[in-house]
Amino acid sequence: MAQLLWGLSLHVAFKAPLEAVTVACEQLRARGVTPLSFFGTETDEPSVIGWMPAAAVYLRDPDGHLLEYLAMLDENPRPERGIVPWSEWTR
Image 1 (cartoon, rainbow, N blue to C red):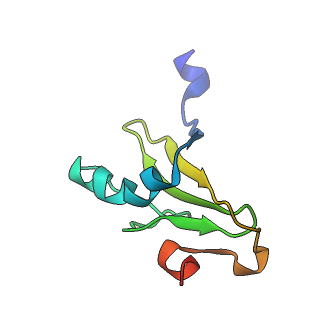
Image 2 (image 1 turned 120 degrees about the vertical axis):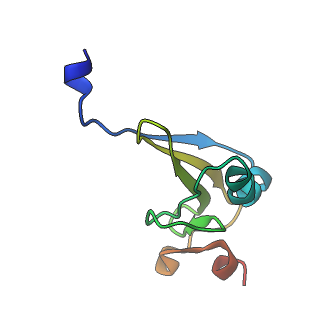
């Protein structure tokens, strides 16, 4: 079985309350985990996916799989905004 999974990288999203997603970067960092943006760069705030809309924070587990904390926003989709940092979305 291990040979079949060699090189396989999974992406798993976990539904979370918005309050948990907005503090996730700080909490992950406090535990020695690097929070990532939608684009895979280190971040201090969630990314907002405008066409959903949803706020998300990503991280890699020890095996390299991509994990995502995702909170749907109670707003109308704004696909023209693309994917932006939380601070830009809430301005």
